[in-house]
Length: 180
Image (cartoon, rainbow, N blue to C red; front, side):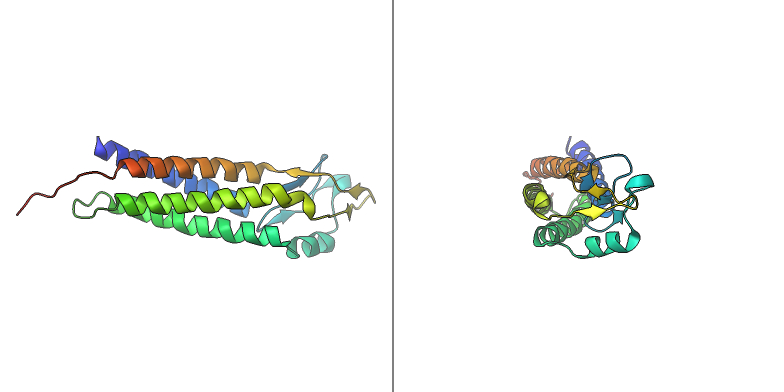
């Protein structure tokens, strides 16, 4: 039973780690309404295409000037990625009969969840506070924003990280070593 829980924990935390990396490096945290509209992420951006394409210099300048809530969200997601990577390392160490890593692993997953939760909360509440009216190549004013797909991927990653913390908490128990 414990071995199945360990494998289940590993699958969950690796999946959560991959989702967090996807959310971090894809440009869909803030999206603009309309076909071909630009998308901006925590690390990357996409300037749109067709009539709604934003000039590259303006798009790059806007993406480079991050608001404080974007910097906080970026830092917390990076910390969560690091903690999840440590949790993946703990997963492989959980198979050693001499190492008792249930409590540290559950704590690391809980901290990673907490970081993702705060990042999602801060970004979700403040994403409209950064006013960004941009003019497309066809001189159309691009202004309507909404939370994009990468934001929702981060939400799913946070839920899987919470699930991993719960499963890792189930690994904490009385595992007595035989006396040699």
